[in-house]
Image 1 (cartoon, rainbow, N blue to C red):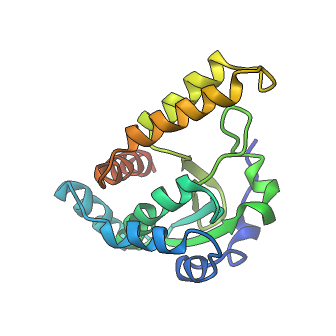
Image 2 (image 1 turned 30 degrees about the vertical axis):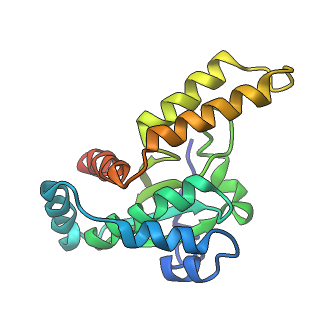
Image 3 (image 1 turned 120 degrees about the horizontal axis):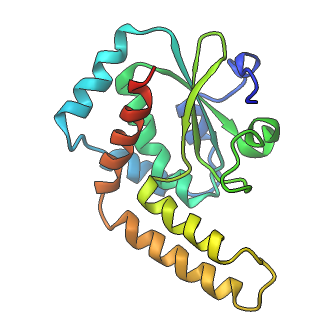
Length: 188
């Protein structure tokens, strides 16, 4: 059972504090943030319509060394800012207790975007990657359960390359994140 996260509210970093405190990948993170644009006007309108709601909070498990954080969280920040959802970043290494409730196929992967109500009850979560990218890793892990296999490192390098290609060169994947978060939040 997922823990109530009310005690974590006020313990995280604001999005700005997270970015300013980055010791790795700050420039790339800011570039992805600046590159964000709404590719679907109905998604933007949906998130803008949430501004009247004061019952939603977001906690994002993240680490500045993680490529998926650098790529995905800038879009998440924009989306949640548009929605007016109060957002805090929990640093992975300092919040293992929360991370352990959100393992991906048994492993720690970030970012994890947690949406909760003001009482700290978790309503849902998203991450660590858009579904079309994550499915590549899920398939890899199912087909390669033995991390000690002699060809494991070569195979995981291949799947990471495929994941990079699935993200694409531009910002199209950001629209996918918006759609996935819209689908998640629409259920609340």
